[in-house]
Length: 163
Image 1 (cartoon, rainbow, N blue to C red):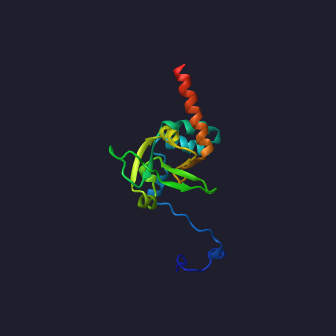
Image 2 (image 1 turned 135 degrees about the horizontal axis):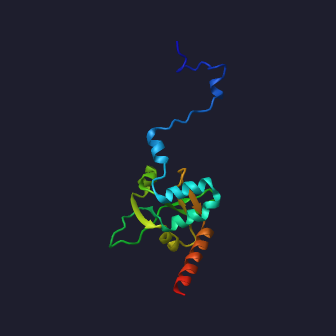
Image 3 (image 1 turned 120 degrees about the vertical axis):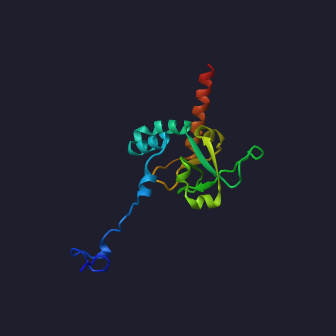
C-alpha cells in the first residue's frame, strides 16, 4: 500500500517540515529559455555582473515592448506606457523583451503592446526609470538616475559622431 497521497510521514520526516515542491511544466521550461539576442545577453549578465555594460548595450539596440491603455496609431501617437512602482516606491516604466513575457494581469490593465527600440525609451523618459520583464527571472531595472546617465551617454555619443 502506498502512502504517496496520504499525510503519513515519509522516511521518518514530518511532512510539515519538507519543502514545497516546485513543479516545472515543459511550457515553464520553454518560457524560461532566452528567445532573443537581448534575452541571451540579459541571462549572461545575470550570471556575470561584469557583463552589465554589455547588457545595457544590448538593451539600447534591442526592440522591447511597453503596454499602453490606448492604441497607438497614426492619428494617436501619444502613448502612455504602463507604470509600475518598484520596491523603493519609485515609478518605473514596464518593458518586456517578448510578448510572451507579459503577465496576463498587465494586459488586462493596458491591452496594447507597442514595440520600440530600447534607446528610444531611454531618450523619452524624464525622471523615471524602467524595469525589463518585471516579475520574470530574466529581468533588470534601471532607476531614474541610471536613465539620466544613459541619456548623457547618448548625447556624448552623438556629439562624438558629429565631430
